[in-house]
Length: 429
Image (cartoon, rainbow, N blue to C red; front, side, top):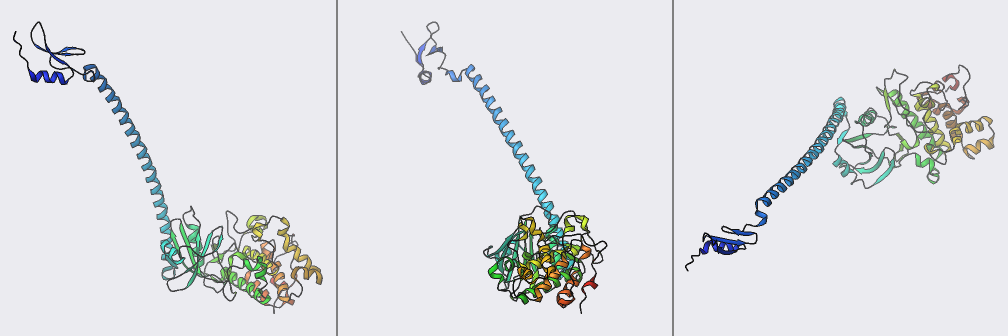
């Protein structure tokens, strides 16, 4: 018997898991596998036609799923990019409007415009906001130092969402002033929501601490208090008459009066100020501005009259009462409604002219200057604007003799029918 073996084919058969053999009927080579004889080598189940079909179908489903996921990710990414692009476009548009406002302001003032600082400059000037001088609803104030060694006060405003009009309005208002009793603006920073004002540094801080801090208040002599009162009155008179545009402050209070090393007062914080022509006596206002306890009645209720520079006169009168008599707590946090009638309480005691009652209000040994300031303040806080003197007249009343002052109508009560303020009632020599 003769048998010829093809070792190459047999080797492939064995490697595929089969055994070499031959077909008895034809003597041809056969590879015997578990699923039956095959011509050359065993075919694995995973690579069979049915298995290959299942693999292709599975691969197609996985590819579809992967493709869907990729499309979803692409859509989400595109939506986020569109949203981000819209937000950036809005911010750029708003920034452009803000820059236009600043550019227009700087152009209108030319070389007289205050210096514009970058936010990096502000951080360097304040030594990264290390020395805080105070804090309020508008933001915080820090002590700083310019490159020439001059100390400054930097007011860093809180993040705002407006287009910068109120900020530019404040810069514009202060930039129009040049008076010994108005704080000097040295520069500003406007970079989007990063805004700051650079003022001259006043070492004695605000008048508030000399009113509500009893230990500090004792250090102020009567003459010093009187000079502070006159200085504030002169500063307000300048704002109302001395500029080419009348400036209405609308927030005169002890917190916004700063004192230099010689206790010379300077009006500050023009955040809610309004500009109006000198010939205009009344202005319109959509919302009340000021601080409760110092805000004029007509600013809240139009039944008292129109809003004008007389609104600042009322605030000055309330502050003057605080300066002379003091109160236990700031009026903007008053809880007891009787505090709002504090001027009437003083008036009743002055009207009686009883020494004990007067001493109860002003303290034993108080002099004529304090009584003069109280009488002037009562003229200033008349409920109706027409009954209040202008600031020019207030200065004259304070500088004139006490004997020339007449008792004003009682505050917080209706004035006599047809009564209006008449400077002849308080003539000065």
